[in-house]
Length: 246
Image 1 (cartoon, one colour):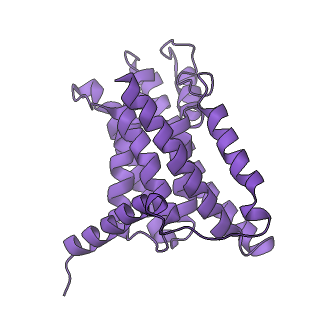
Image 2 (image 1 turned 135 degrees about the vertical axis):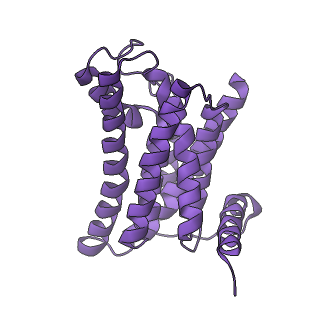
């Protein structure tokens, strides 16, 4: 009888194979119809170019200033998961991946996301610096994109591990906007981060399921495939930028 360790190892191995698949040619298919037209690919790469611009990669809502009150902290926390490309793309792709999972697994992943993200934010305040956070944020986009491209759903143990580790590094990057803040702005910032992250992940999943039910049965499959391709592509570009910055 297989133990939980073998299950996690198998699920992680599936993720690794999914990362390598686009480059090894395992997923090359001939597509037809509007969902696979060259225009879609063109829009994806155009979007990558736009979102990689310095303005789109801005990471601070308060123009470099630390939030001074609870309202500034809340607004900053609500906005940061959206204005940071790696954060937004990670949450968007994760929401689409979780749209295929039963609700208990979705809620478990969201709980792991919130707890580990807050831990990542608070770690520097406790003197526990998390190194190379930007680099691992880029890697997390690639991994969750690979999960979207995978033919099978990621198991619950591997999903929680993937989401938790990624959220820890994303939280470490978020912490830079709140360094030196007092208690009230800090708490409001944490609340804002949690609200936006959870709303994005859950909301995207609900939207995908709703569109599949009332609009197009093939929408979840196509959206998962193209979002995965976009996430892996942009994640690799972000990774190159992170390595170049180091």
